[in-house]
Amino acid sequence: APLCLLGQTPPTPLSLEDALGMAREQNLSLAIAREGIATAKAESHELNSLWFPSLSISGEYTHSLTEIAAVTTVGEIGSELLGNLAPIASAVPAIEAILEDIGKSQLRLPIVPRNTAEVGAELMWVVFSGGRRVAATHIADQVQALAHEQYCATENGVLTAVAEAYWGLALSEQLTEVRRSAHWLNGEHLRQARRLEEEGMITQAERLVAEVAYKQSSTLLHAAERDQRVTCKALATLLGVDSIAISPTTPLAIPQTIPSREYFTEQLSSSPTMMALRSGEEITALTLSAERSRYLPTIALVGHQQLWSSGLDKNIFPRTIVGVGLSWTLFDGLSREGAIARSQSALRTAQTSREKSLRELQTAIDKYYAILTNALSEYRAQQTTLALAQELHRVQLRAFAEGMATSSDVVDAAQRLSEVRLSHLALLYTVDTSLATLLMLVGKADSLTTYFTQQ
Image (cartoon, rainbow, N blue to C red; front, side, top):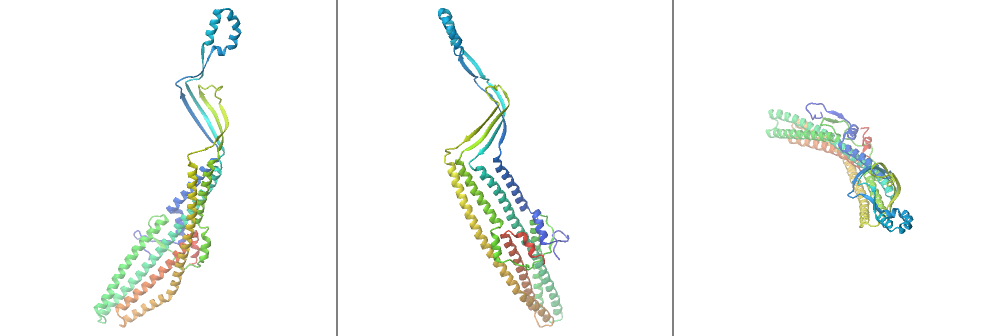
């Protein structure tokens, strides 16, 4: 029976499909990837905000050390009046002197007091940015696409890891059963050897051989049980649950159908990994376009609305101002040239990385498909070997009971049978996990259960 992790709690039956569903909902890596999609969506909104105007409210208080005023003379202000009085004043020298003194007198007319305060609303709406806003919009779309593809790639990796851990637990469970069966057979053989020794039919050495084999099988059984507990805990971690006892109900088996290698090669171009690399390359190309647009001017509508003021005369300082502003950087210390060169280098790196990843994935498909087909061929070839080992063990047990075989012959036959059984299970595990890896490489890990629905 499957082992329990916590006391005598009975194990929880779990199919591969249910395990994959639990991982989708509770795996922590997928939770982080989902937050990445939310972050990308927020970043996309931030980039698209360049199309909207900015409106802000600001206030300021100023104190001037000197009063802002207009300084003039009486003569400049009253030049016409003094000019009319000039003929009369010329006839009376005393009056003429008085008028000259009056004309030279200075007048100070306050314009802005020393203490002023204002609260106003500022509006700016960029109507032309040289293409930066268009590039930002496309970048926003690619950022969301990149986050989605990265999530899909993470999901494929997690589902593959869950499948490997699930089948690893199934393999551990079967290995434990093989070890338990071998231990039981060695126990039966030891009891028979002791009986035959008491009857004088075999020597003490023959009985000791059986006893050593029994103790060794006991050690191997305990090791298999420990490995099963560790594997179960690893699967529970991937599923995002506490350590519980799990009993796999989807056994290790040969898949119903195995796609051709050409199928995996054709699906590779649409895999999440390649799509994410293409999105990253597109983002880099759009960034380069945005950097080049910095050579063009920026044109914006601007406006100011005074909401409240103190010390500012509305006849001098209008409450509402609208206009068009232009900003054109002619030289910035070669900053734009450096940014363009950096973006060009990043684009070349992205293109090379995509080509490199494509070749590596093609190599990985060839590798795992070869492992899959070799394991499948070896598994089918071992069917006869397993039948032979079972028959040999049965014959040796009967021969030993009749005194026609030694204890060593029985132990060797039992060990050979266990080795063939373990190899048989290991080949099944290799076939199943290789198929899971191939599906993960092309982004089809979620279709894994369709290959085992009838098992």
